[in-house]
Length: 471
Image (cartoon, rainbow, N blue to C red; front, side, top):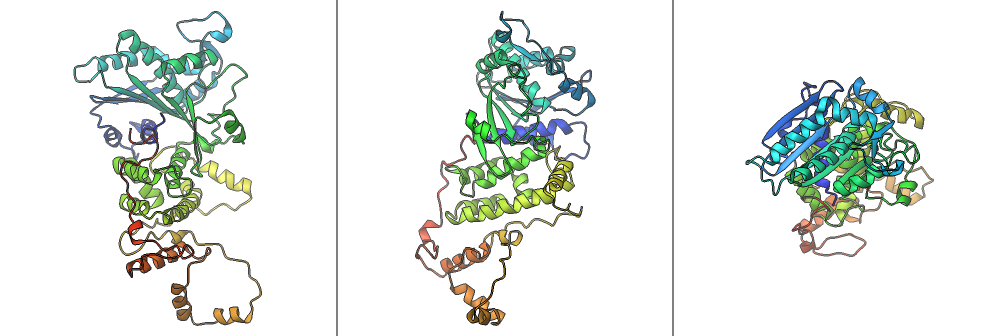
C-alpha cells in the first residue's frame, strides 16, 4: 500500500544525499532525517570511480538507504549509456525472456564492487544482535539516477537476503526515476520487490523517457502528482494516456516535487480532499518536522492553524482554496528566484522559460514579500490578504447604485456586516462575520446565510488520517 508519510520522509532523504558532505550551507540536516524514524547509526558509501553516492542509516527496527541522483559529469555519462546488458546471472533463453538492464545504471551500481559491499553491510546489520531481524524494515529511495540505482539495489538486496535466509520487508520509493530494464526484468522485479512506488511529477522529462519500443518497461507502481494537488495512485492506461503532454525539465527538479506534494497536503482543505484528509494532514505535520517546516515556510501554516482549519467543517474547503491559490502564485513568483528553502534542484531557469512561453513579462528579482503566519487568536486565517478577487468590469450604474457608491465609507462598512456574504466578497470578511454571529450566541441559520450550529463547530479527529499515512 502506498504511504504518503513514507513518501514525504523519502523525499527528505533523497534531497539530503545531494548535499551531505558537499554543500556546507545546506538547510538539510542528517539529524533531522534520522529523527524521522529514530535512527541511531549512519554510514556513507561514495564510490569515486563513477561518482556513485549512497547514504545509509539504521536502528533496531528500520534501515534507510538513499542514492544521490545525477550531480556530476560521470553521472551524466552513465545516464547516456542506454544500451542494455544481461542482468547477472544470465537467465532465460529468448531475448524477451532474458532480464536485461540499462548499462550505465548497472555500471554505477556495481563500480568497484559497490553493490557487493553494500549488500554485505546490510546483511551484517540484519544479523547483528542489536537489530530485531524479525521486524526490521528496509526503505530504499533516490531521485533521478538515484531512483534507478535504488531499483537495482532493491532487486539485488532482496535476492541476497533470501539467499542468506533473512528475507525481510522492503519498500522502494523513487522520485523522477527512469526505466531501468526490459519486460523480463520488470516481471521479475515485481515478484521480488512488490512494494515499489515510482512517484512521477506531472510531465517529468526523465520519468517519461522513451521505452524504445520493447526495450524498456517500468517496474513497480506509478504514483502521478502535480502542482494542482492531484494524485493518482496506480493510474490506468487511459489515465496515463490522457495526461500525456509536453515533457518538462522543470517538473523533474526536486523543488518541483516538493511543491506538488505540498499542494496535495493543502488540497485536503479543498473539495479535492480524501476522506479524513484534513485530520491526516494534522497527524502528519505533528509527527514530521520537515512537513512542519514546509507548511510554515511555504504556506504560512503551523500545526495549531491546521488543527483549527480541520475543525471548521464546511468553511475549511473555502479557506483551503484560498491558501492553494496563494501558494501557486507564490511558488511561480518567488521560489524560482532562489534555491528551494528545503530541497535542492528547484531550478529557476525552467520557471522563467514557462513565463517567456506564455508571453508574460519576467518578474523583477526582488526579495519575496514575507508570508503571513496564520493567527490563532481572535480571528480566522488572514488568507484573503494575498488572494483578493479580480476587479469586475465596469458597467453603467443606475441611480440607486450611484447613491450607494457615493455613500460615506463608514455607513457602507456597517451595512456590510448585516447582509449575508456574496460570492465575490473576500472570504476573510465572511469568516469574521460568521464568527461574530457565533460568538453572539446564534445557534442556527438558513442555508443561504451559511451559519453554523454551535455543536457542529467542533469536528472529531479520532482515528482519521490521510489514506496510507501513519503506517
